[in-house]
Length: 479
Image (cartoon, rainbow, N blue to C red; front, side):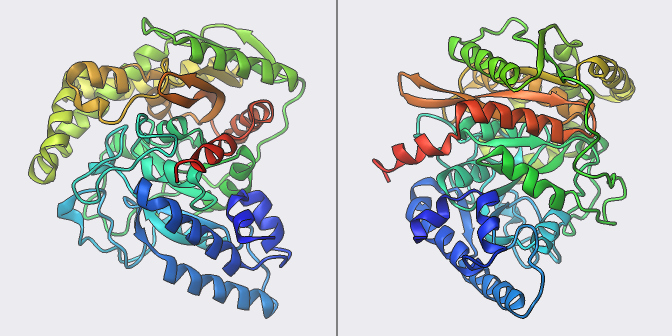
């Protein structure tokens, strides 16, 4: 097998070879590093190159296996880590110039869990300032570009992660999601992800000087962006391993109980007054048909009011941001991010004071309504965004830009507010005026059943194919 072949392998296929010692961890890592050196200068997805350390770790893992040690489930898999999560000895800058020298004293649980499983970190990926945009650019590291072309934003806030993994830089990319920051980059780049539910993946940054607000704690989750659904089944069991530093982590197995009979899927195209683009409409039809062919029972039915829950939840989050984070944004943020937040506060008027306490209480109502609905429909197939992914810097274009980028994304941030898992998977490659562009849809699942969402994503992928393949063909003409 040539080095060119190795970087193309997804994590599932790669571990079948590394664990059997058909290729070494060093060979796997070197192939990804070479790919990173080839394409990253044009993408700026990886902003901290850890090639030297990665190769040293790969050689040590190879030696340990040679000495008889059992390889981990992710043995030799090259991964990237987002720069807003602690990795011992590295800066947790969060895309902010003022935080460029905040050096992590220890690894965050997700980094520790990945490395315990045998994964090897080859670099750290870009994020917007404070990891609070659906696009990825900052004054510290600059703009990340989408490998499909510069007419499409790479998404955010895990934009570097999404661009990297789809371009072939590592088989797995770490990211996180408070309102869509795993799913926006997946949709922008044609990747696959699942936003875990509340309490599923242990989280904590040893470098943090204060605890996060209650909504940041309950809405933000850690996860992975991949090129195939199978890689989520492979890697997420390692990511969800318990860590005592997260006192609210729930130590449950990745796979839940098998369902009796065909699984019912609620299917909706409701966009709450936003125009549903014909290409998104076609993607939803393809996803529905793929699930029916796979044996699911798909019923077109409206789920509980996601618009009210999503908008209320995001306004509550803005209230917490206004109270706890605005001073830091004003002191350390660029003019761009300060201006964007002012428009955020217009699009989502912050809920504060007594009203915020009441909205936090109402969160249980929304979650209960969805729990009752999902007793009959364990999965919900819906749009992720009603339109194809937006252009870079669209959120800097005032109220209209923020409205297009985040205002319509209620299916995204509502899942964070009520704590449900949600997968995002490409269901169509659209030929648009500026060129080909992936169209992703969302599959929400019952609490604790991320595995069911990923199973459904795999069924859609089986019909549509992996988006990395046409992407790499396209990149071959321009990189």
